[in-house]
Length: 198
Length: 230
Image (cartoon, rainbow over all chains, first blue to last red; front, side, top):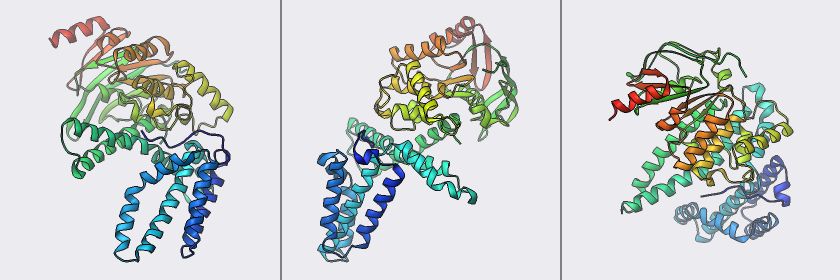
């Protein structure tokens, strides 16, 4: 099971969710805008490692996040080497990996309700234009909390296919995963309505 | 609590894509513990889902505690707590306490009031000490207790449980059954295949083929149901 939030009392855990999102967005922007400097990647890498240590999450958690992003990295790298020099492809992919681990740090150190509240507060001025901040906050919260649920479906499908002695293939994996996810979304919609959240 | 603890169905029918799910059901229920039994696809869940407006009738009228689910759906859903058979579908937040607090969002309560209600609900569903536990790591029984807590925290007048023990083992079935039938103060509509739970209700409704086939004293209704299925 994938657990997103890791309880803790570090500086990053105590930082208000809204401020944390703004700081991390600024860091990501800085990494993107200083792409051509030779210092960008080492600095960003050291920054990411330092922040994981500050958050008392340690290197194993950081490495797990990198491992989870391995397929994204592979697809990025393979597609870029056709058009760019290898060094540029590696550099671009590495920067994206740093951005992914920094983004993961937000969900690892912030409770979902805190993110929900921050989103609602940030979007409150848009209410006069017909935007529903509570609805958008709810979508964000549901997206984050759906990750472990869908991860659980994937594990169930792999287990069921192994139990039947069938090799795990992409097509026999994706279809049941989609069906289970859509069924879950229907049930979740009913459950939210039943809880008076519409 | 609403003094008008009455559920009234008047000639209610429901169709989905040309299939009759409920056919001319008329019944008035004032009992505190109402059991609903019947075969798969008999209309039990459609009946239950009409109680909070998740399903609206094609014809006929439904009144639940003085409110029409089709017209006052939003208001009614705050007064009717609904438990599904699969607790995983009802759990929204990452930890137990967060999920309970989620039910109180938008109700204008202060943080202290929310914390107080979360603490008392945790106690009432035997989950004290699990506040910070990841919700999807709980056992099936604990998840169903959390789902029950998530609706009880909203202080509903009516609890509708649609096969709440379908995925549970004998011990958890007993635990959830006892909690629902013996402990909660609200009126309860319990849809179940577990005839032992149905037998503990004040009245039992039996659905077959979308029709309300039998209704009344639990022992008599269950005896006729068992006779028809042996």
